[in-house]
Image (cartoon, rainbow, N blue to C red; front, side, top):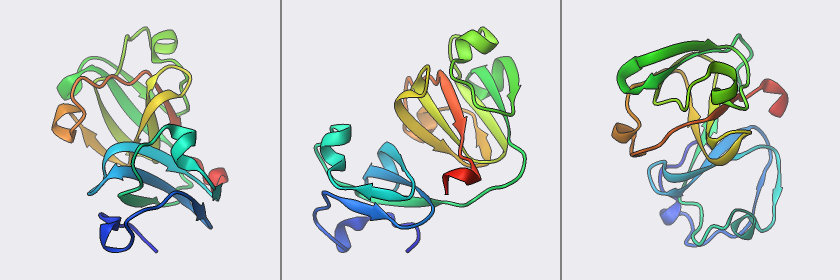
Length: 157
């Protein structure tokens, strides 16, 4: 099975699932919107209480395996403004490492990344495949500020 933008035509409820292979992003809204949750191989018998969901999975996206170098530029302000830093590895605190309060835009050149709203990979997360991300509001995430990031490594598959 691959990406699915709307599970409602397949099932009305889902309270547990198993990932048999690969890495996936699960969304609590159709069309890859809403809260995002990263899943890798394993069983999730009661994911709703584990993450405090009051709803079920509405869409999912497969994350392709990547084995090259990782590279992303993060920016202090929207539209690639303010301080810029090039990242090639995980960062558990943007503030501690780069002396930036947060990241407001980014350009993912290589690899697939997860970005988190709090330091130390905590809080809500978002998946970023290669591409330019100038403004979180245009992506449906108004007032979002990222404070840590991690590469999705091939060892996770």
